Length: 349
Ligand code: ATP
Ligand code: MG
Image (tube, rainbow, N blue to C red; front, side, top):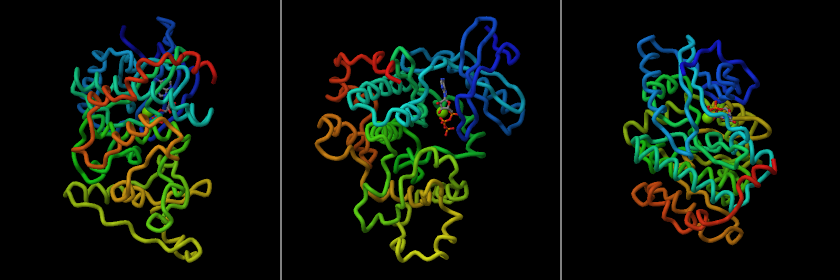
């Protein structure tokens, strides 16, 4: 069927990111609930049409690990993308509601995301580019599916000019300007899985040994990242384009040494809120220069899970495995045969 704005009635807001906002809507002719994503696009009509054309690739994406696509249309100056409504929402919202997610559930999530990534890449040569908990969705059947993958190059270009919101899940090689590969998605998956198991974004002061990482004044949550300074990122991408490595992290004076003036000066390049202060540049430098995050404390989680996340978070992209290879990992095979009831899990929240 052909989707039209007038056939869709708003039910409720589901949330918004930097790229746009998402609403639960009902498609009246078919009485179907959908998630409608509205993206403001500042582009010429020809580019807008190109985006709509490119988005139609999603029509051919059929996998139980990928959110179904109902259609996309132009509602100038917006582009609307209608997809399967996932009634339990995204995993960031879920862990913020219920706390750290049981590692066996995280294993099932890892399996689903790897299956989804492998399908997208093997069948369509699509690299996701934006794996993070808010793009991994759950429904009351306990199904886990990924959404918001990069099918449209033109859409990526149009949005890239107006926002950059995913840098925290970005791999070291991407920060340094290398091309996206499926292995960049694997890094983002590793960061996301640790976040789900720990119940917090894994780059934070408490992980760092007190000296080199004294920069971190608290956890930088993914939601805070939404407000990151674009100027900072432009600096990084310019350097990255020239394949120049980032400089080593700048030592910041210890908290006690920090004067008011320092605070004020750093304000322009840092994110503040809820007592958290951290410069985006410092986070990007941390990802590039410091050891990758790990499932900690050691021994709390099955060793297979530790090995798996370590494999996802190999900083050297040549040593990192592809989604397809990781599907054969012991932890994933364990998750596959586990009789854990995801539907029962999803009924607990
Ligand atoms: P960003 O814009 O940085 O990618 P995001 O993924 O949080 O961040 P959106 O993609 O706009 O932003 O999604 C906003 C919220 O809408 C998500 O956090 C998710 O909870 C919800 N959402 C998105 N798609 C669906 C869907 N198909 N079904 C149910 N909820 C959804
Ligand atoms: Mg999203």
